[in-house]
Image 1 (cartoon, rainbow, N blue to C red):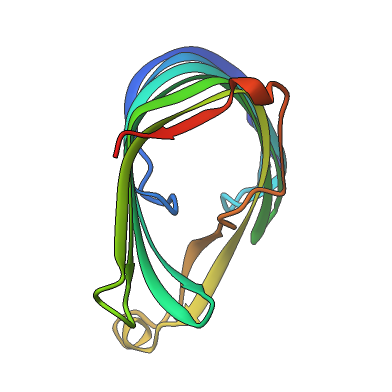
Image 2 (cartoon, one colour):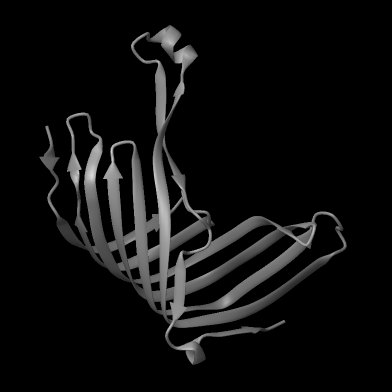
Length: 198
């Protein structure tokens, strides 16, 4: 039997940390407005249908981006911590199909800036090959479209089954998030700036 989950809206004044993001150490203070219209949930708690919503916010935060890069036959570690603030609106649409979900995000960034943006690149093949810079950036009126794929993956839990024969499957949600967006456009190119202090 399907039960409808009501739409809701509320004013946000929260601190949050996004641990499932490809960004390490993302932390923001968000002030804004949130609206969510959820899909349907069956008797077993699985979602069917869709979810749509949007937020409009003023965000102050920091992020610590750390990742591995392979370019021109050489392995690199990239470090990019920064402080940032933004005024933006974020919308999403999710199609929920029991064991998988397709999420599409549209971000309208009216203004995003960082007064402190540190970038470092270090070669793992040649440790003497290292460079870094400290700078700032500003983006004005950008639209970014992103995609995520969520899957409820299950494995056979043999040890759990020995303890509880009615529970042989261990299931958990796995999130697949491409690093690059599907589409990105800037309407005011002359407002987008990036420069280095050193």
